[in-house]
Length: 282
Ligand SMILES: C[S@@+](CC[C@H](N)C(=O)[O-])C[C@H]1O[C@@H](n2cnc3c(N)ncnc32)[C@H](O)[C@@H]1O
Image 1 (cartoon, rainbow, N blue to C red):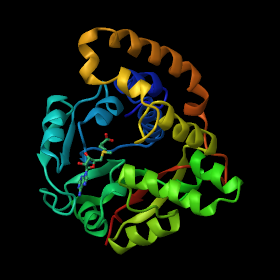
Image 2 (image 1 turned 60 degrees about the horizontal axis):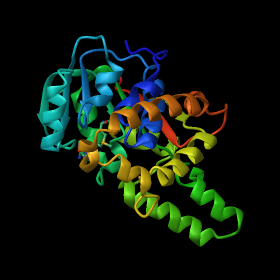
Image 3 (image 1 turned 45 degrees about the horizontal axis):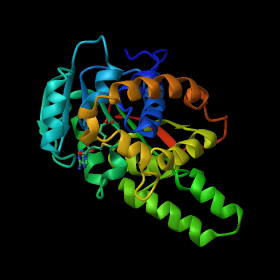
């Protein structure tokens, strides 16, 4: 079982020191995912380079399967040793028999897929009866919790706020932000029952994350200094090991509260955890 008490913030800052806001967002995701039981066998849908599963299932036996459409990511995921099998495949054509997995999980993937319903249908098909579909996605509050959006709304610049959020969507290649009710409908269409939807990344963390994307040069046309200092082209100058240690030490304490903050009851957050179940008897 994943461990919700692990310090995912420090772990991810040391992995993503060159892009600290990525570390913050993903560390919160891991903390949230780690509180959910994962039954085996597990499929990691859109596994990317495998780093997230590697951190989430550290000290456990490799998980059964992962797949991703991107060949380079598949190669990296296989190299982690975290998967018994890794395939190159698309979410709408999974290379597995019906009813294979007890858990299909997907971290930060579904928002990037233009045609989602066939991927949900495939997830339902490869799940065993009683199996769980677990996903983290940006929520329906994602756009309005961006610091840049809020600042423009506060001065009445509603068009500017929408344009700001459109720019972030475009940069991150996000296609949609369903709310929990819409998730329940989409999942029901493929025979899955929404069991739990839980917001994470509260307003304060979301705003700090958005600002940090400017500070650390993640967004296009944002501050370039940190991006330059962390650039792989400058690795040969030898200072980056020091920069990495400095960033990990500084931000693992500065961002601790943002990392640990939960969304208040009845509140919304920028991220949404979805847990759905395939009924035991259809
Ligand atoms: C933001 S990355 C997340 C990767 C990994 N889950 C993680 O948390 O690090 C999104 C991943 O979704 C994958 N992806 C995009 N379209 C997909 C599709 N149609 N089916 C499955 N995966 C897809 C991409 O190749 C990419 O690796």
